[in-house]
Image (cartoon, rainbow, N blue to C red; front, side, top):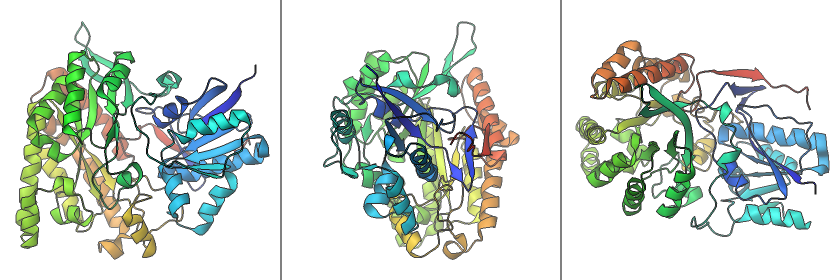
Length: 506
């Protein structure tokens, strides 16, 4: 019996006629293996991350499923167009995920024609989470049942007993091995692949630039801890886990149960996870995280300017005392209090052996060039080993996207630059700073953090084994290589390049 051919695609980033290619990536996109877990045995599955591989448009598939981050969606539409041109009605092309959902269901697009183009080349669009609708669609396809153009989930899925991603379909040779925070019997660092693991969905917060709570919901849904640990135990021991939750500690009771079970079951993989600053208020939770194998805590610090955080409703960073000082117009005191609070949180994580990994957003209300350098120097003085810096970007589905579009301050009509590595809005009308000046200061301050002098200074401020210092020194050098090329180092390998797309196989 001949099986149907199914292609699951994550498009490359595309700006103009160029697409971004990487030699290797840090870790795989987990959405495609998750979709693959629902696919019945009547299909043969191909998974392609176009950033790492080329797509063969001459190969015929029964179904092509495309899901995209906002910076990849332009290319996703073009891929659909190319396959339709080549195979016409012999292939079904479907799209889904956060960005397709908001563009089609709620008109989060920069031009009317953009939405029309998607509807022209895609046979079906999935709105919302597809854990229920995707497997039903495949069943109907096998039965010969035609489905409506727009397929919308009626309710958010319960995460209990849903399948875990098909990790076996990931082409690991396309990914870089990372330090495992372990040594072999000779004392040399061990390296392994970084694998994403999901434990929950949802976010109770409502930051103005973010769409997580709008898409996934404000109520946290989580997988039973026993199911998560069972999945982890099946993974190779020489892997490093990255929990994809927007806040691993959203429900402390559940998180503690998960960490205790990981400790009891002797989970051998170390992990990274995203926390909020308020997570550090629970000393037991942080201690359990460390004992369970947490090595890095990704923290959305965003800014040392309290009024900037208030402007985007980043309430998870702000103690009540800061609000009181802002109300009394004591902004300098509010900033110093906030910096002291950040410092205290960093110390709490460090005392348990967890390295805080803050992210910074540049371009918030109240930002200026001086603030960028002040933020970098604060993090250097705190001995922060790694940080990542982003341009403020109103994401598709966020409140600020609609506001910026309404006031015509978004600079582009396509989404290829919406990866937080470009300034996509006119800063002069919002911040009183011309875009070029802000961009220069962004990359110069970023390079200052990863300069050799500051790398050594930051390492000297941390008490850790010599081998770990060497590991961080090497990682910091790689990050500097990326930043020097104006490449965001956390999500993109420094060995990346822009290439003109190859149309020879169309």
